[in-house]
Length: 114
Length: 113
Image (cartoon, rainbow over all chains, first blue to last red; front, side, top):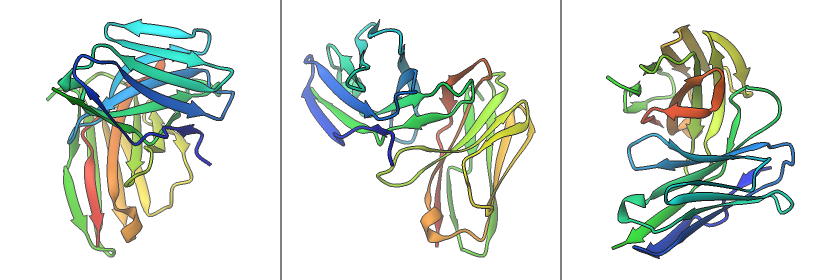
């Protein structure tokens, strides 16, 4: 059973508008969440993260929101730029210690149109 | 070279072949990982190495055999693979004190005929 789900395989937004990517998880033991971005022919790169003790983390144009009661997190990109077009992966980490066991979602392909 | 490199970038092999994937990290990390990404599926962790010792094997079939001779190099030896093993194989590294922030290589696209 998939513990981290990104139910939207793709998203298209206009340049300058807000992009909202969503992620749901089922395991309440997850305590750290991350977003990775992947361009074609490259490996994923770390974008932003949030601890379960917070409900928001902001880094420039990127903000991650965490709703623990709903087991839901979202990534907001404002304003969206064509260079943001990529696949975005949500990932979660559990409380089993510093094991490096990240559980990834399937990814959402974001297209930002000029 | 900087970051995490992987060779080859593409590999086509028959089911009876033996091949190896290579990963090298130039970041001074001591934790390394192998992931598999099949079409339309999430990245799936296969193996974790910390300071050259395997600390995680995510129920990977024995036809995949990892090797970590030092903290900078990681290999994945492949033998008698199946067509369903065709996927993108990604290597990553991290500091052992921050294993959530992983740095990925570009991956090897493997096709098993």
